[in-house]
Length: 189
Length: 199
Image 1 (cartoon, each protein chain N blue to C red):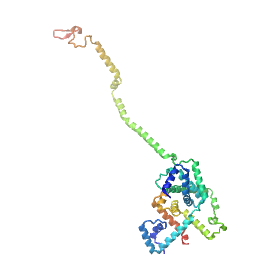
Image 2: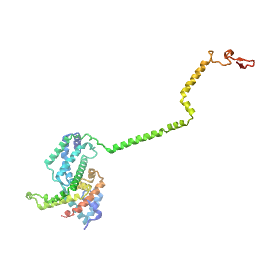
Image 3: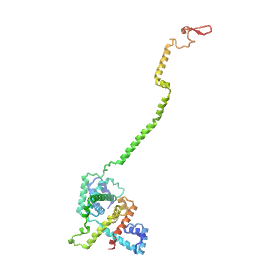
Image 4: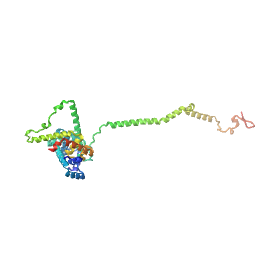
């Protein structure tokens, strides 16, 4: 009689000692009471796993071998000057370094492009200056000189005024102006 | 094994106390050797080398143990990873040798059962010895037919009697994955060794 196919998983869980769910275990035990095939398959499986385990057991590690192994490990650890409490140095990692380099390049290029973009209004100003009339440009270029000349002109005007101050022509005596008036009040030289 | 005692030993080992390191080595070396034996194809010499290397790795990386799991769980994980690495290295090395010098393969055409027979003066039953060696060879063959993950999970379950959550912690797999590998491995082993179940 064959074991039930639908019980295969539970059979293996049971044989491996992993049937921990109480409800499943109860159902499985009830099934085993009635199913001869599953019962025999379970017994066969347990026997096989027992034989496999016995066959796969390692030969006993002798006391000398164990001692020699422990001493070798201790010696190697001491000899390598291993300090377990210290972190081992980080290894050079290529990918993070490459990613960081790419990020720097992107930032630099981005900054350069941004700078170019922001410098466009300045260019517009330069272009509008090109479009200005040459006379205006001449004035702008010689603005300082013109300012100086204006100052000099004002100074000369002040210097040219007579000593009695900057009075009006009406206030000034007629002799000093070099003008005479006729009977109608009109001036003549 | 009292946990507080082990925690104290681990703390001292982290502080580079040789006595604590020695005590931890002696406490776990048999278990580590046993895992290494099964994972290194049942070769005692390879198993000793692998166990030694695994324990060195454990104490070399002790600073990385954060205490979130039990020390033994972390240790088994390091041991399993070290043994898997050693097995991969050995397989690559063998592939390299046998692809360059294929004539060597014929030279290894000996019968391990007959090679490992005890001497007649041992006083043991030769029939049971032969059957034991045959079973051992068949078990080793059955293990070789499994994938790396299936073999590791099966060995930890059957030989080390670890529970599924413990295997999951030791291998870094999910419990469902462990269960699935365990089913497939058990089924495969059962199919290959069916004749031994009837004896």
